Amino acid sequence: MQPQQQQPGLTGRKQKNPKELIMAFDVDGNAVGMVAVAIPVVGSIALFSFLAVATWSDARRKERETYYKSETLKKIAESSGEGARAAIELIREQEKNAVKRRFEGMKLGGLITAVVGIGVMALLRGLVQSEPVYLAGLIPFLVGVVLMVYGFFLAPKPQE
Image (cartoon, rainbow, N blue to C red; front, side, top):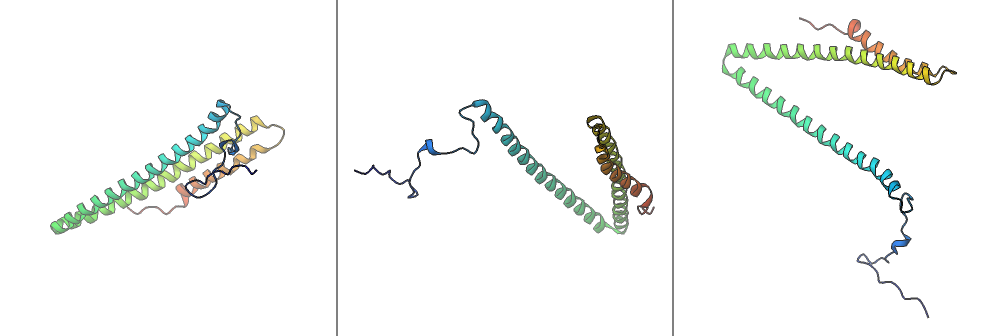
């Protein structure tokens, strides 16, 4: 006599016994182990969901700002000859401010990166004193120095 066959499921495939299913991680019914695996998974999902929504909302905000600014400038330019000159002057002033902000950001970024490099060197020197692994901190330090040198000396100066 043959064993009784299981009825196929809705997809036409044979259903598996739940005891035969193998989990991706073996916790042996240990709730602490399951929680230890679930926390990073849930945290990762939450982090990347937040980043997606934040990026989307920032893009929408920038789009709205650009639209409103262009509409305002168009209305000012269409109003009269004096308004057109004022709109052009406003655009030039905004471009100057954007260039100035970019260079100031580059200088600040270089300073922060250089200080992080110094901190990494100090940390690695304290952790491993037998070998010169602290020299790995020279990489961010030198990147920061290059950013600062470019921002202060080599970058083209904005015209007044």
